Image (cartoon, rainbow, N blue to C red):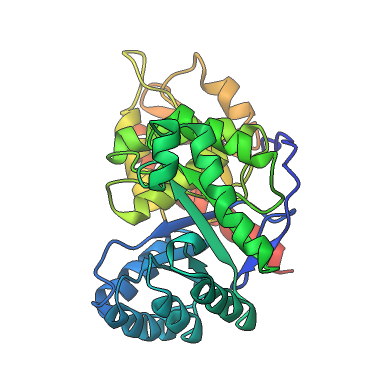
Length: 366
């Protein structure tokens, strides 16, 4: 029932990664990256399918060798989601995966050799109508930039990015997006703010090497949240030392929290206290697991007592307010005559949610 809070987006040029528009007025896309060995085609395809099922719009695959390029070709045949090829240094790999159907090349032009090699990659991208992603990382800046600034700074990251941008500009190629990632939240945020003022291309957001699932999610939420709330960012990846599916979930949770893009159930749940009339934590955890497959946006409040329960239920599509033995049930802010046994809440609420989603989906088809 909650309405979107309008955030004025930075105006950027729109490009396309396969069927997914990035930049302009397109929705902010969520990406992830495989962590299987690319040469293990079956494992990589399986992981890509899991990432796609979680809602990702784009997936990136590392292609470090020619053997991996051949595997990339077979992977591309077996999946439908847009696939970005991540390449470093060897321009021949970039040429090969472009031929094999890559939807985007993640490659820094200045790192692949002399002008002739760069031109061949750019010409190939142009011929195959695929964009390039310039990816600058605070941990791998060029030696002369490191010497100039002494340490990674926002200006250093942006100078590196603009160095690569200048090459593409010189070759009259404007189908690219840029990232300036760092593991330090404030360094990354400052770099993106500076870069956003200097180019019109889409920006790929990320806090690189953010850490494990919990700490990485927090760092990413803070950094990406700051930028997105300022209208900066056209696509994002949450980098976690965890299952890539978790990156997708956190990415959508960030967008959902900012009311930028909604996917799936938004659970509004109390942290629980001695007033709770049912086990709130267990109920929410079970429902989240059972309803992971749901893509339709919906706000569901699960509050363990009558102190905040009715108020939250008034603002939700569905709500539960804890009461002794049987809890109150709300739909669109209206209390229903029907009440649910506290020991059967999960089954009852899942059934109601799925029934409501089925009705919404039918209306959308009509």
